[in-house]
Length: 398
Image 1: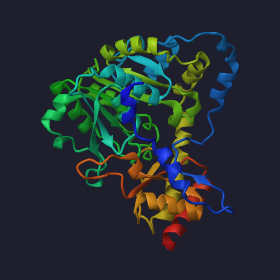
Image 2 (image 1 turned 60 degrees about the horizontal axis):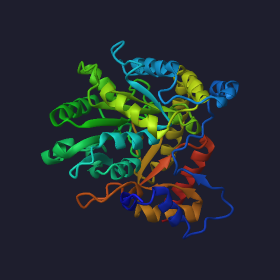
Image 3 (image 1 turned 90 degrees about the vertical axis):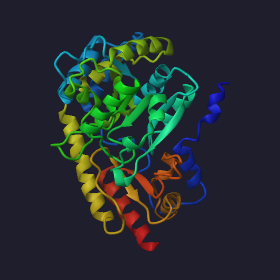
Image 4 (image 1 turned 180 degrees about the horizontal axis):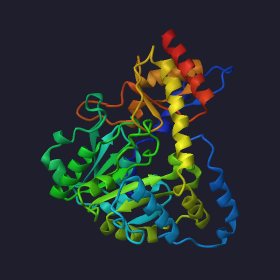
C-alpha cells in the first residue's frame, strides 16, 4: 500500500463521532445537526425535472471533458459573475466539469506537485481537510497558514519566509472560508498573483461558498476576477473551483468545475482521462439549467440571511459570535474548551456542532481553531432557532 496513507489523520467527523459516543443525549429532544455543511434547502424543481427528463442518458458513457454546452454555460456564468474580459475564458480550453470540488481539489493536487523532496503545499489553518490529504498523497508536505481573529481570519502572507515561498508548489485559498466565512479581498489576491509570478507556484482558489453572501451589494471577489483586474487574461498559474452543492442546494448532484490557466487545465484533462472522473450526462444537462438561473440563488441567500439574523439575536447575549461576510457557517467562540463544549452541548441538548480544533493543526505553538465551534445553519429556520435557544440554555447553565 502507498506508505503516505499512514500520514492521513482521522477526518473531523470521525473524531466527532467518537466524542459523542462517550455521552448520551436526552431522549426527549429531537437531534439537531449543525455540524455538517450539507444544504437542506430544497433543490430547484427545474433541475430535478431536467434530471428526470434525461434519465435515458444513463445508457451513454459521458466524456471526461464534458458537454460543450455545459462548459459554455460555466464560461458564461464566470464571465458575468466575476466581470471577466469577454472571450478571455474559453469554454474549449479553460474549463472542465468536475464531480464536486472535493474530487477536483484532490485530483488537481496530484497533477500540480512534482514530488521533489522539498515540495510544499500551503493552505489556511483551520482548513478543509482535503487540502492536507491531497498534499500528502501527492508526495508533498503541507505547510499551514494560521488564520487568526487579529488578521480577520485571513493568513498573514507577509510573514511567510522566503524559503517557504521558494519551496511552495501549490497555494490553496478558501474564500469565502470554511470554517470562518472570511473573504479574501482583491488587494490580497493581486498580491498573491504577484508572489506566484515571483516564485512560480500555482494558486488554487476554492470558491465553493462564493454565492452564499449576506450583503447583496458586496459579492465576494474571485481569483479570476483579480487576474482580470491585472489584465492577465491568460490566468497564468491560477485556477478556481466552484460547485453547485452550496449555490444551488445540489450536494447529491456532485457537480462543479475547475477553470483557469489552460497550461494547467490541459494536463489536468489528460490526468482525468485516466482517472475516470467524468460527470453523468444527465447531471451535466441539469447543471446547465442550474448555472443559467440566478433567481433560485437569490432566494437561497435570503433564507440564510434570515437564519443568521435570528440565530445571532438569540446567541449574542451569551456568546461571542459575529455574522460572517459569507458562507453558511457561524464561527463562534466557546466559553470552555471547544471539544468539551461540543460534547456537553450534545449531552444536554442533543445539538451537534463541530469543534474548531478538529479542523486545525498545531502551528507555531497555536491551534488556531481551538476555542471555537463551527455551526452550519443549513437546517430549517425553525430548527436553527430551536438549536440556538438550546445552545443559549446550555451556556447559561455552565
